[in-house]
Length: 231
Image (spheres, rainbow, N blue to C red):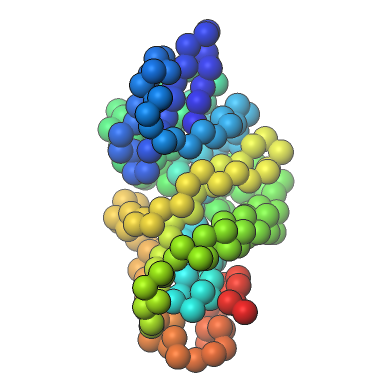
């Protein structure tokens, strides 16, 4: 992501889990590097004035059946959002970054917010599942379709992977894909996460034990929602 502020630049690159965050004004540094440039969202949808993003978990099976864990959460920064600020704690919502700020967990445990609390902060003007997730699901499907030929090249059978998808929304509730984590953190960082992650893992393992079945549906009340079945 790139921020332009008073003729200077801050460039964040390779920020998965907060690693190797680079701040540079000298473009020469990147001449021999491969980087991804994203349009910075100057007016993001905020949670009580702080920038946030949404984390979702996606399960992909060896035969390319795709599922979305129906619960998720938002991750917020520790400082109020200001587009002109050059403070990483204002712009980066990564847990591994924010936990080092003195205001971390001042407003909510782990800076992590449930869907219900996020809706309440907006006076229930939106419903996360009805208003935000439909477009998010489309992006998830398109993103994995775009790399279907590169996944599981060794054609391993009876296996699966969990991806951590991060989305940011603008002031008009439009979703933008920030990143896809192939090794999403499963650290129990708050009571909310303590409730969500064990159920997600248990249901993923239940599905993994049932990979031989053709039907993509889970029995009972599933934690995962079916998104796509490979033709």
